[in-house]
Image (cartoon, rainbow, N blue to C red; front, side, top):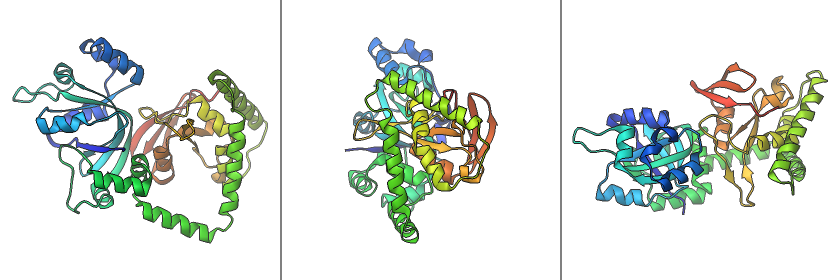
Length: 349
């Protein structure tokens, strides 16, 4: 069964939170403190990317919880009355010298040696009151230290939201409960009887885009993706901009150009520090394409206007306060609710 853990990064732990959760560490800087096996395994997981890491002091109780941590378990980070980050456990190690390298020692000479590394970490904004309501904790509940959500609450989340990941995405993108989301969708369907027809068209477009890549090797998929993007750029350069209906936006993003761009980015969120993807039940990776400037609002019908996002960040781009600050040929600087992010667009050509 999936598990959800959480820890607090406020109070005395605030500096650690700023250094290794808001900030990052790099394998090259601490590899001398690892065994050959640990180094080899961490290289497979993180390569040369930045790493988020946390540690707790060893006690019989905390070590028992820490021992239960499994790669793929979800982790929420709490600070200043909200959950600020979400990610997944990637690796753990009991290593005092490494903990001392990251965080030093406390006044009693004790360090935070029960270490766990996190991957696919993204910023979220989940008020603790919304979380406690969803998991049916008391209204005045708040996280303390390091703990795991109890099994009853976890089972209820999976029953309602299908997975821990979808639960986190739901809370971080508008703070709807699953029941509210369902009711909203039902009401929208009642008001728009053509939605089912449009949905079938979109599904057909997606299948057609997938067909273009079926049976190809990884290298062949990349080559076809580059050809599709290049052809789209050439076509759009010969056309004048024109208004489009919103349904065209959905079709364009779900069509072969959106599919090609996702392929070029390995179906990983292109926001630096995220890179999240997951495998669908058919074994294929999943990501979503997003128009930075919606076609219905005068946006450019061009691959450079599409970015690859994980479901969580995609919903933030639709519901949060997004501002584009700076654009270069390879990167895009944006703010999400005032927090700056860099988006990679270096593989669009």
